[in-house]
Image (cartoon, rainbow, N blue to C red; front, side):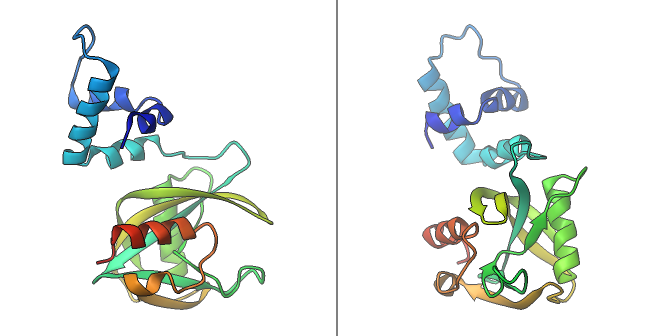
Length: 193
């Protein structure tokens, strides 16, 4: 993680300083030193994901549809779902989730969508990442979260099939383009193991 990440995430340093009760004005720290200290602290206390959650978009004003995805991990396997509709996407695999509705947060959206699509309750562990993709039907900003299945029996209400995939099998499925960056990252990090 380098200084560039923090430059791209305007305001993260201020959030970090406020959350940690820090006042570094007039201390003589150089920017590089501050970023090094920040990187070390975040790596060891996992505050980076907390700070990113505070910076997540709640609505899209640039024409992108804001969509959520659940990376539901259980016993070293990830839940994936095969699309049934629309015809142009049917047969492709995805991480379940759905479109943000007016007035709801990303987390509320994901919990609602999983309840509607799979008839189960989840808890959200952390934000995982975003993927922006331009489909023929429009562009989406897909926000993924690592989740835990809390209760209920999986029922594919809008998907043709649900599969618990191992990490080794994950890259063998034909995923929707917006989901592929998450598949690649999961495989590279070995998250399901």
